Image (cartoon, rainbow, N blue to C red):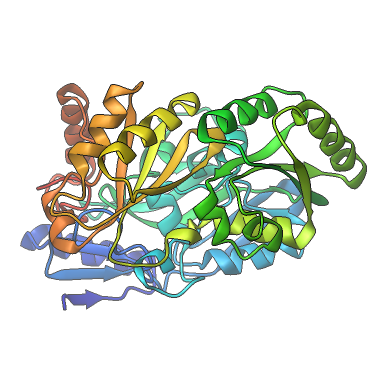
Length: 409
């Protein structure tokens, strides 16, 4: 186990990082370690535990702005916002159980570092679209701020977007400000039964291009639907395509009726209301169908929505027991495969390259596999060189989460 520093404030964080930079001692940054299985294995003998940097600093419901420390649990934030009928619109997923961990242990800082977002992403954007500002400590041990506590801020570089998805390799967050939004009054989900992957992509495209403001589009092949905890889905005995609608009661009812009329030619239809609808979208958000078995490899593919069926067909031709489902109108594919020394990286990325392009992220595999395989999509050399320069400007001694995203950096 690495020796761990547990700071209680930003000054402690800066002191620890300055010591590490002076001594050339890399630090592994983490909160509650709910995402320790994501990315390449840590390459350091010292750790910086930021879990004590938690708590809400300022919440102004009328202004739709929330300022808090990065170690705050997402589950606690969601409870706070729900009391004011508000929400984190990017719908942060809870991936802890995918690696055998407990649910509800993810932090806001972890969600920002991994740029996580759930099924509403294609409508509301990712967390980088909701982070207004932050205070952090660079790899030099310098405290700096970026952005502001207002929605309209156009001054300087857009550093909030840069730190999202940086996996703690650029700076240690100490304070963040997020934009929040009103929670919908009602939620319903229109279900279409029995579609194959290609036909489901067409149905989701029709819904997405309609004027009915859908807030979730997913397709579950028969085997995945059967694993759902929602009876209407699990007992269907066939594939299920789900289309979520949110808003006021009258509006949701009218839009669902319009969607049913629009989509009736695709197949049999049904609706989920309230609790059942919320349950289904939590399962989709958290990739719950793939929690077990833990030894299976898990990938997250980003492709053009209409290309997803071609990509999965190519993969299944080589790996018939591949399991998968689609989110974001088909643009996000969750793919589960049997264990392999290379996690089937060549097969997965080859199929994507051959059918329209995109990128693949290895979500779950043995530690030795994650150390040997490119967990994130390899970058073209020009982009990789730019990434290295950005890393060097924030962390010239390469002490913050070295190797978490790519070998040596």
